[in-house]
Length: 319
Image (cartoon, rainbow, N blue to C red; front, side, top):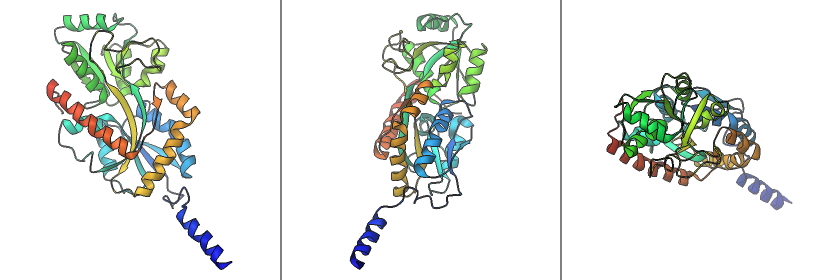
């Protein structure tokens, strides 16, 4: 009898509770978002937070820290305690673009532990409903006739929206002036209002497209997106070779215990496979996915090199 009890105890020690890595149930797990409410990263965080709370048996809250194209929030998380209570919605800007533009207060490779990619998606080339631009060819004609005075909006310097526009400029052989905003939402507001003619938005523009407040001209991915049926790619619309794929993922501060990373990854695989969450994200133009921490780390390295080459060729400067 004693031997049997000892065996049961041994097995129980080898099978930790799902929430063992977060012993303080009164302390919330904070998911930091580097952009204001209403943008794509924020929509993703709010879509998955309840299900992630259920999986981890802990309270997951969203903490918006906008500014500097996500750099303020990224640096905040880099310096946070690696205890599993602070997580971050990683975006291409802070992890693969800005590291090629200037020396940062954080190291994107050394200061973070990748957990998983969460969604992939196109950016969308959109214009206001009242502009004369009906397609990419018409837009290109207007840009060329403007002699360098045509402008585009983005959610901030060093964001994937800026990269999408700069690749467009380089491959199409045109000039446009960059107007950076503090997030996608204010950029879209000014495009709708005619202050700036176009932007390469994340999919948070989808409801505005559906309501007729914005006109979509193309998606930035190499293939058409099921989230934007009937919309051509930039490449097929007249800019051959064009391809920009956007993504969001989850990271933790470096030094976060491996068992915490493993539990987070396991939870996210289940969350991102949930049909209701996949449907909710699809409405926002995102394709839910997941991968391993190792696969996510490889993606980050690959894209840093890819966008670094574009930045050098295009002569993009950080502020």
